Figure 1 (cartoon, one colour):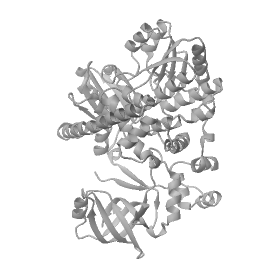
Figure 2 (cartoon, one colour):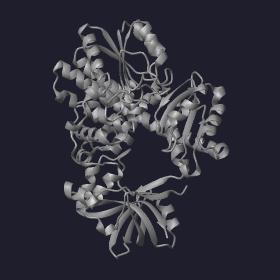
Figure 3 (spheres, one colour):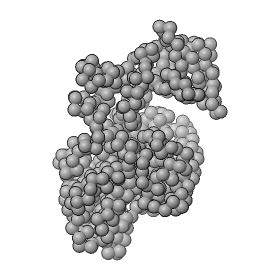
Length: 568
């Protein structure tokens, strides 16, 4: 599918911003394209620190939740943390468990089994907690949609605290909330927290801040947990804007000197250098390993790794998670091929892709849905056969709010939850086809929505690039969802020479000349032979690029990373 190249046209006084903040006007344009507006927002973006975090007291019920936990700890009551099986749930559980143990609480944890229990807290977990003499249920990264389950907990006389960040169902303009003694979720309509897009681990982290304040525990101890809130933010693909971006930047800095034996071992097993760890490594290497336990065995493996202080045990767990992730990759590739074949043969004209792979491991549904979305640029839902009926995960595109779409067909579902861009669901097998048809009937999508758009920050001649500008662009890191790496474009680049490099022939080294006759080096990471075949005898191309520094044999030179190209 041919993508449409789009040039941002957002307005601001770029020269004034550049002068005020001593930056290049190009950098000012990039920030404006990320919707960073106003001097205070620009200052936070460029120079924000932990002192710019929003007060946890702004979170509705956060003080109440911390107060209940303090009271239950003083009374010696048993508290059970109920997390979730993904990276956000694991990190949330870790943060709360460490904090409760630090204050001397009688705390333990439970993480649902993806296959046996499904997403979030269920009645069996509540009944088991009651049988174990647990007084207080404390959820993290789940619970906001557990209306029936929390009603049962309250029937049994248990105290309930919900910490979550997922979207909240509404009826007649009002939040539909479970019964609970405290609900901490920034998505509540009457919550005054300024930044709604924090993950579950950050919600937990904020509650811990208040708890530590009550106990007079130093900020230093709270800050030591920041790396896990940062890992969850990246791993749960939250928008790297506003507070999230500051937290991830600060947290990544702390990971480089982490005291976590388990995290260090996991970095080693993946042959990464902890001093150079960035958001990409968290999102695409470390995060998938932490998720692999919850996908193929139990998420408690990842939690045990993070809690582990023993070198040998941490080494064993890290190796096991790495191997599980390698196995997960192979299974995902097979599932993605089957799903694409099904789309090509049956559902090519559908606006919303609903693919049923009964024999696929249910934990891979979300990843495969993501692959379908990338391939066809359509909202994609992958369903698998589960112990009770059918379960699935969806990944969406910007113009399709998946959670609201599921609300419209909720009568066909037994359970669902999620965000605009992703969702999880369960339904009876008899309803699979009706579900697919209903989603497509309701979809207001047009052909224009299915054309992927590649956004260009600035149409910038390559000769404008300098080492100081490249260093300045690095100030905009960490890059990720909502704070994408800048992209620049230039037309009419002449190719002097091109050669395929790499043992897998997966890159092309380019010697280029700009329209003004300036020689420039470039590299394109792609299937080299396909590139050369496509190029043929043509020597002119338009490109989208990002400038970088190539260091080779002690020599530094500017090199353009060619992201997209069109031969003339």
